[in-house]
Amino acid sequence: MQDGFFLLFLPTNVFYSDLLKVFCIQKMDKMITILGPTASGKTALAAALADRLGCEIISADSRQVYRRMDIGTGKDLSDYAVDGRQIPYYLIDIAEPGTRYNLFQYQRDFRLAYDAIVSRGRRPILCGGTGLYIEAVLKGYRLAPVPENKELRARLEGKTLAELTAMLMDLKCRNGSTMHNKTDVDTAKRAIRAIEIEIFSGDNPAAESDTPPTDSIIIGIDVEREERRHRITDRLCRRLEGGLVDEIRALLDSGIAADDLIYYGLEYKFVTEYVIGRITYEEMFRLLEIAIHQFSKRQMTWFRGMERRGFTIHWIDAMLPMEEKVAEILKIDRNK
Image 1 (tube, rainbow, N blue to C red):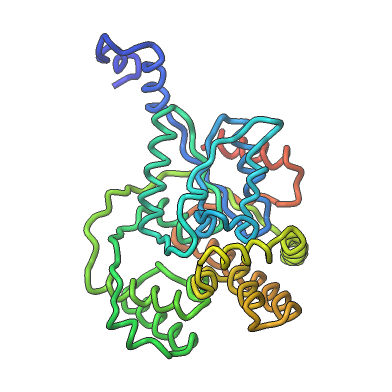
Image 2 (cartoon, rainbow, N blue to C red; image 1 turned 45 degrees about the horizontal axis):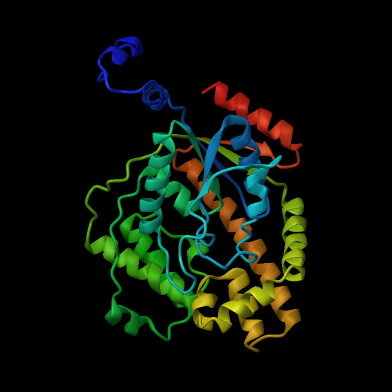
């Protein structure tokens, strides 16, 4: 049916603004996804693009969902203001620290945000570095809530991280799963939870998810290795100078258990261990710097894996001026 004929069959009580909204939804462009490793400038680029196209941004960061965890997660909320204009964003500051926000919840919350944006005739931009979250919503993973298995946790308690990682990899091979990689198992607690999910998924094949695949143009920010390393170290120094240690002290003082912060990994793991006296400041900085570099490498491994799994990622050079990066994306968008 042609669009002109479609309009003839709308109820007569539909206002002109509603008519335009329905028409816009019918003609909605694909979502744009911007992904890349940590410290690659994703948020600033997404905001500049959103300002140009009138889009709204959905975050794809597994730690930015937590309130009061601002410096360590790199929320950089000031990036969402472009020339004095505020870009709407979603899925940031939606969970309490100390809780365990998971992929099932993210899929659900993404769909709510996506539908809300599209219902207003706006175009969503998905932006972040958590490859599992991005792939889950693009592909429409079939998921169900996974309950805690206390018996399994008791059996696994005391095993080393290396032993748990080996168990997880074996389960992944048996399940044919792409649900977890080493990014998700940098602590024993995270590894045990990943094993719990893999076992549940193998024993309980999920019913069809009510989260369908999401069609998207995917833009990757490509940062040369040495430049990436420089950016990571520079940003870590700025975060420490900007109050990261105080942020984590405040979280601990509010009653959040040290182990719960350590669970979140990276800054929250190593700075917490420093604050509670397990390691020195020098050890904290050295170990954290190494861990972030390793994390960045694992992110790129995940994104390259997405390409092998059938996703087309259009890579653009992070070193280009902002206007040129936006222009490249607009050109890719026009050709789709």
